[in-house]
Image (cartoon, rainbow, N blue to C red; front, side, top):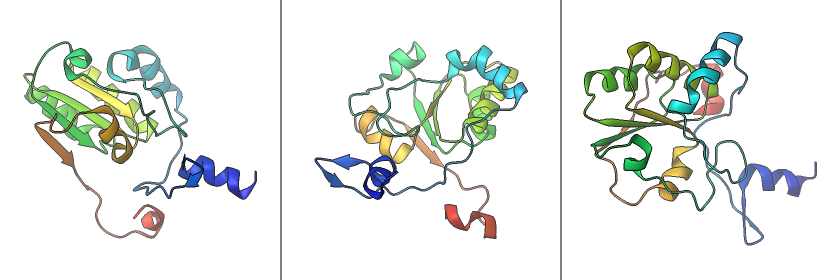
Length: 167
């Protein structure tokens, strides 16, 4: 692949000008082990919001819009979690506060599958997940001031050599 083509796929292009894309993560595997693949196949349609993509698996096309009432089937306070990982926090909150709705943005597919598994086990239906980079997706999918809370947690803040590429 040529350098220009590679930059097109990795950074995105606007009107023939290459735009640097800041990433707060390094894409890890999308492959699922058999147990998580079964969970995904059985329950993802209930929890995962499929979106039209721009360039790459973690992008959202410019025309995608979310209506929280349509996503959850009700009007309720909305909490957005950026980087939900395996879903421990968001599933616990959803179980404790069924009157609220929770939307997670996560780029790690095995983590999303684990979140779904936890949500199914907890019997919660007030969670939705988007496989997308929140930094790029939020300005596209929502109007301003749509969420009551936005969470960004950093549960693993200490330095580790293997995390250098993601920091």
